[in-house]
Image (cartoon, rainbow, N blue to C red):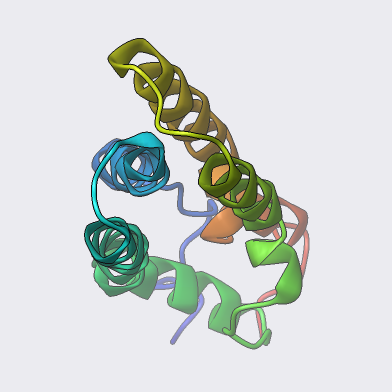
Length: 140
């Protein structure tokens, strides 16, 4: 990629990706607080998280992220720090599983907390937040 084709500013997470992934994560964790079978909870949990990550990492903006990194001679790969914010979600899953089924308002609280956390942290999860520190690297 020539210097003229290289993106000058780091790409940002599109709002549609951020909102969709946050809602899917929120639903995935909130279903654990409902009085439904464990199999149903497992399917929704795994399906929601898988769908959120699949949607994110197959979205066209990921090409811009790759081009931005490769133009600076850096490697495009997931790192542990990208998935560290998900540890809070994991703790939420463990706590929610241990609680008895909640009323609708308890499920709504679990949903809102998880959705808000993921929405705030999503630029860290998908790696676009870290691109601002790469901005000063010279183009390769």
